[in-house]
Structure formats: C-alpha cells, structure tokens
Image 1: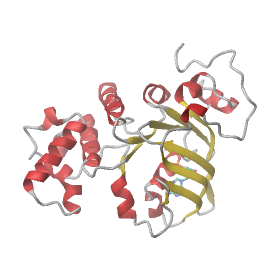
Image 2: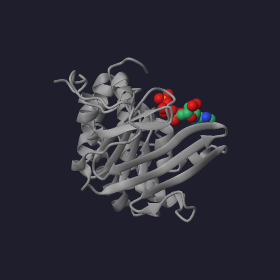
Image 3: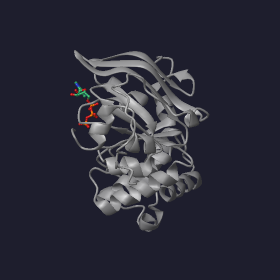
Image 4: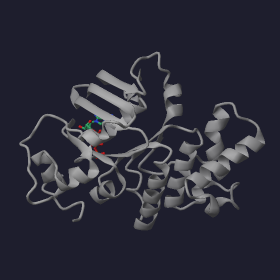
Length: 278
Ligand SMILES: Nc1ncnc2c1ncn2[C@@H]1O[C@H](COP(=O)(O)OP(=O)(O)OP(=O)(O)O)[C@@H](O)[C@H]1O
C-alpha cells in the first residue's frame, strides 16, 4: 500500500486531544523535549500547548497547512524566533535535558549544536571555500590545513565535493540553486551540530535537486538529528521516521510516519493527508 493511502478500515479515534507516541519509540534518546510550549506574536497565539519529543538520529517531519505554526516551532528550537520583538513564550524546551529558553543558555552556544537550512538557498556572497570556512573561523580556527580539512569534509558530507572541488575559490553565487542548497547544508555541517533544522529546504528546487537533498537527508541522519518542515507529503512519507501534524498552532498528532500516513488516529490528520483541506 502507498504510504499516502489511508487504510480504509483503520480505526479512527474521534478528535483525540492526546498526542500518541508508539511504544516502539520509547527507548530512543531524546534530543529535544518540548513541554506545554505556547508562543504569541503580539496578540496572535501561534503555538498552543505544544508537547513534542524529537528523537536523536532520526528524521522528524513537521507537516500541516499554511499558517499552522510549523516554521515558528522550528525557529523556537534555535531561538531564532526571538528576533521578532513582539514574541512571548511560555513553557519549556529542553535540549538534551537543558532548558534552552533559560537565558543562561547562550544563543551562540545553542546554535553550535543546532544548525539551520532555509527554504531559499542563502549562500554568502563569498567563495565556495569561504562559505564553509566562515563558521569555523568565527570559532577561532585559523590553521589553513585544518580549515582545508573541514571544508573538504563538509562538502563531501553534503554530496557536493566532486562538483566543486576544482572551483573552491569561485563565488558561490555561480552555483545552481540545488548546488547552493547543498553548499548551505555543508556550511551547517562545518560547525558540527547535533541537530539540523530544515525549513522547506527543497521547495525552491527542481525535482532532480530535490531527490539529491532527500538522499542526503537519509545519509545525514546516521550522524545528525534532522527536523524538516515540508508542505510535500510525499517527501515527508519518503524521508521521515516520525511525523508531527500541526493545525492552528496545535500538534494534532505525532507518530511513526508510516502510522500517520496509513492509520492516523485523528480524523483531522486523515482529512489533511488525503487532501480534503490545506
Ligand atoms: N513575524 C511574525 N509576526 C507576526 N505574526 C507572525 C510572524 N510570523 C508568523 N506569524 C503568524 O504566526 C502563525 C504561524 O506562522 P508560521 O509561519 O509559523 O506558519 P507555517 O505553518 O510555517 O506557515 P507556512 O506553511 O505558510 O510557511 C501565522 O498566523 C502567522 O501569520
């Protein structure tokens, strides 16, 4: 059965408020634990009582219709959301047991653990080499040999080394969109994070480049925990281990991806994945 085919005879619970997690997931290491998280932009209540756990070395997909709070949730995990002056949050987000909303957790420190890749590739207007070396240099690495090694390892890790190894001094803007996105992933790898947040990383790319990024995500999850926001449900079904369905700022349901796409517990999840709204 296709992952996107909702099983006809699956037993559906009516609009359960409980977010179910399969027992088989219970033994995984948790990288992010979000408890009763609420977030407001001024008067707009964008995240409502979010309770979610993100497991280590898995791909977690976040799906849901436009405006349901997916990107906002992602941006709470590296505290980028704090850049909006009207933002107010309550609740807890723990990264490996440590509260990230606690101001004693320095944001620069958090971002060395949690990297982010955006919807539109955003290389710096610098050479390919300098794009990758930028983060390590900020962290004080000046030794040319070490930087060379980091650059090569990061570009290899993002499946782009062979395409750029002979043009490292050229401007990154000369790369195609798909190459630029893999360069941005390499730039993230260069700071050796634990977690990579991806906000619709393939929505600006053609199908071939999209598949390359999807393959890359599968490879990266051996070493990193990946959280990906996507509008593309086939993509969520193809590449994620667990999926959270957001609606109107709430998590309706989170479970193994196979379960979400074949026997979701909530009627609203079924309606969304079968294309009845959104
Ligand atoms: N900077 C902001 N200032 C005020 N409101 C905001 C801001 N960013 C997002 N919002 C509001 O918060 C809610 C959630 O937005 P968010 O961008 O997180 O949704 P999303 O699910 O990622 O949407 P999309 O799929 O369209 O990207 C929306 O009502 C949006 O209008």
